[in-house]
Amino acid sequence: MHRRVFAIAVLSAFALPAVAPASAQERTPPERQTLLDLAYTLGQSHALRQVCEGENDQFWRDRMVRVTETEAADAAFDGRMKQQFNSGFATGQTEFPTCSPASKRAEQAVARKGQALANRLSAVTRVVRGLGSDAPTGESDTTDPDSVAGTPAPR
Image (cartoon, rainbow, N blue to C red; front, side):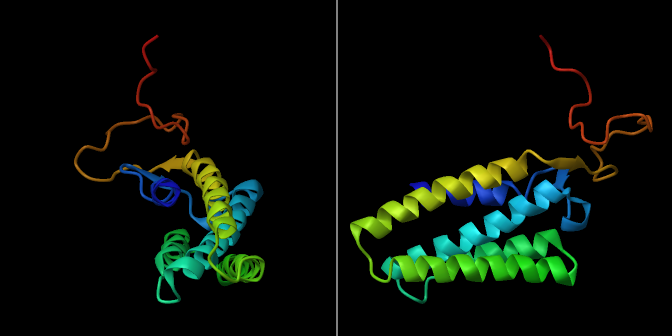
C-alpha cells in the first residue's frame, strides 16, 4: 500500500497535464535539495524492496531513471542525484541485509518520507504556455507565471 502511494506521488510530481514541473536548472536551491533528498530516498527504497523481492526487482531504480530523464539536469547536478541514489541504496543495504519485519517497517517509513518529498516537489510547478489546442490565448505578460488558475477560485 505504501509503495503504491509513494509511487503515485513520485510520478505525479513529474507528470502533470498542462502544467510542467520545473527542470533542475530552473529550480531554486531548496527545490534542488528536495530532489537530492528524493534521490536518496528512492535509493533506500530500492535497497529495502530488493532485500525482500530479490535483486531483479528494479521498481525504484526505474523511477529514479524517470526522475533524472524528466529533470534533464546539467551533468554536475545529474551526477549528484545519482550519487545520492547510490548512497541511499548503500545505506538501505547496510542497515537491512535481510528481509525481516524490521526491514518492512523501514520500507514503510522510507515510503512516507518519499511521499512527503514528492508532494513537496509536485506543489512546485510552472505553467507551460501554448501546449495543445486548449491552451489559453491572449494572456497578459503580467500573469503570475507560477499560477495555474486562469481565474480566481469561487469563495
